[in-house]
Length: 142
Image (cartoon, rainbow, N blue to C red; front, side, top):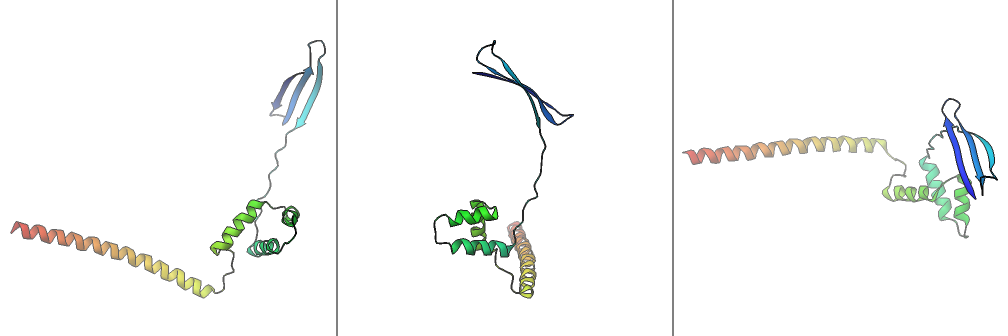
């Protein structure tokens, strides 16, 4: 059976128009008129809260019967890759609630101060090395 596709996309109408020719021989040609709407739909990216992720992971971990994990995934519209990523996030400590914002702010401030002091220390070390080399050159010249 031969199939010949003579369809073309029309950008003006946004439709696919043309004919599909099928048949075993040129004498038995069936032509079918084709008009397919091509509409592009976009979906909003879903965002999941930490509480939702923890709840789903807890529910999946409590499953005992075979096939129940798949049922949960279908019910929630999730993929196994979501669960794998969420388990990685849980292991890395990214899904736990922040308990004390004061401590986190203080840690951030101290980290910033530490980075600044490290830069100053590195500059000072470079200056001291340069001074040592200059002193050695002056001693050799005398």
